[in-house]
Image (cartoon, rainbow, N blue to C red):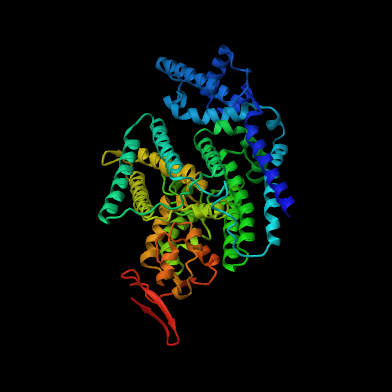
Length: 599
């Protein structure tokens, strides 16, 4: 067994190295054909072809995507200036100026398409071969490492999770450095992303400073400083490298996809088989996302196979990701029907009420209208009703793709969640702030859609939703939310940033039958429950007091109960005190006289 695991680990490392190296194996050569495939606008294409021929860029080979995109940027700028000059002399008959002139907003799309179409070399010539040599070999290595665990005795084994270089976590200084660098870097890049507008990055920085001030003010009022948790004395260097790799992947995926065309090309044959079209960076991401949940889902089954709840929950997130998030949307695209992840709910799906999405669904006929109504019913009816009966776990731990990735790929890092009071205070301010931002942004978007007015109280609604998409939808949910798995735990996004989790949590906190009941008399204070709580809840403190766990942040994953050696914790749905349970500390006492609540 040990040999198989070492062989599997070796295969995975080789696959990962080759996967990274594929980005440098191809070269890039712009031709008339690749330019025609990349640029659909006739006037833009003809002018770019003419300038490329004059400057010598056409049929010139570039050794890297960085060299190619730098040269192509010059071509775009020259084309834009040339068309602007010609437009002053007069537009072609029947053509408006923005059909003729080239707007700067087209640069990113043209650059990505031209880079992808211009790639040539071993990866472009043999995409399936390289896909199996990288992703396929990585899956094989992962399975060889995971499957032997089925033959070990079931049950939780810590296996030195706080000593391993991959799962130990980071010292407070390194964590602060990573977090500070990420926030500062994203805000600085946000200035460029918003076309050199400083207002929104500055406002975000001001809000972050305000939240930090409030957190420390309340700590001072309490006259105590909460201890820091999940901060080892020695940094886990493998975890740090893994986090850096994930952060780099998300930065390229969201804002520089032209530099990962090698990976996108490898996914091309699978994309054509499923949806009949070329792969995009989002198809690549969906494919890798789904494969990660499947492979690491098998790991979850090996680790928690002693618990039926965990087995059922793991199969659920695997099914919903494969069927609803990946296969069904791709098949709908192939059938020329509106495509949507039917389990993605506003405000997590923050683009649902955008004008282009509403128009697309309405124009798509009966299926599109059904999707629009379905999405509204989920928000207004399904979320409060189902959460009342089952808590937020029905979505966050059984259905959601973000939760699915956190529970599978992120499970090795769940012990790194900060259990301190300070982290909890940050959590409440930030996640509810994001929810308010999502509601305001959506309200402005709908007002613009129905009224035709682009500004609301002097704020441009398009600018507001652009900033939300950048700072929350991309930076927080992706770069920090997943990239920080090995640094701050696997539920950073769900705990601090997800607006849907905040909405579900408010319902669960005040109007839900779900709670985790405790039997304090059985608790031996081993701390397993708190260690494995990915949401930063000090479950042991509840168990020691015999107090129900009623927290807005609890996703009901049930791992605390699965790792408890004494059966102290139990996930239950009870209407016994659903309207008053948050008024005071309550505990359930079980005796021969029966079950009763005690204050």
